[in-house]
Length: 97
Image (cartoon, rainbow, N blue to C red):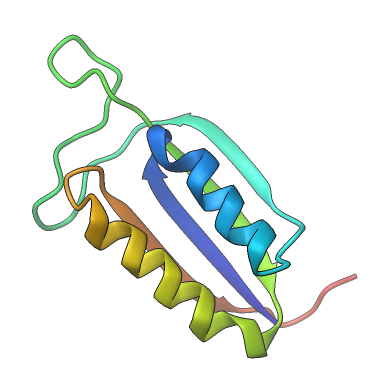
């Protein structure tokens, strides 16, 4: 099992959920109104007058065999609208209860 943390422009929330539904990735935690700035070329999403957009974040636990395909689909979404900004990180899950 892997944990996948996804940070994204709020506008992408519904599309990410559609991808998760299609891939039968059900459980997740979502944070709304997350401020941030990309580490390379991303514009800040700070909810301010100068930078009004905001991010969202999702943390989901994914079965190992689904990780690669899910990450490819997220990458494809990012490439379709690079200016929106989307980053996903895969983390090992050591234990779950």
